[in-house]
Image (cartoon, rainbow, N blue to C red; front, top):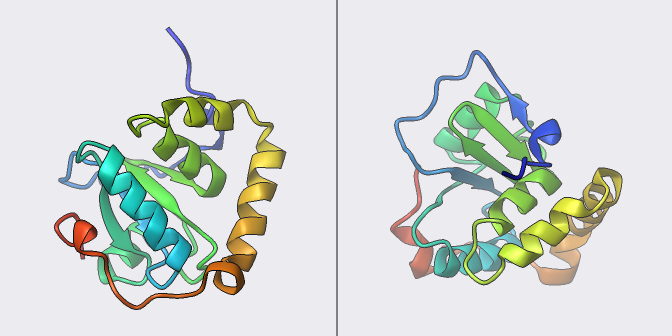
Length: 148
């Protein structure tokens, strides 16, 4: 049995009540084009596992607050799984490990030193608007899985 190497970077909040949803929820920057494209990929490959909510939505802000995530900082992506929250690079690893055809990439991401994975994540997050741009529309493939 393999152990989750992301666990040390997972944050939990004993005060947070698990959401009624049995699906992990991805909190994302709703205006980021890179984030939107990545979620389209997730929607195609996750077999309906994940639900999505923008960090700026009331639900996103509530979940972020419950889990100690700075929702005012759009550099964050997070995955809420019950009472646990994976953030930034750990969230990327968690998501990748659950995508058909990309599990190998999730395992590769997992073996990267945390400092390197976090640095790569933060570098991408910092320049994502400049490189990829912004969007104000929601892709039709995501609409049925949005929680707001």
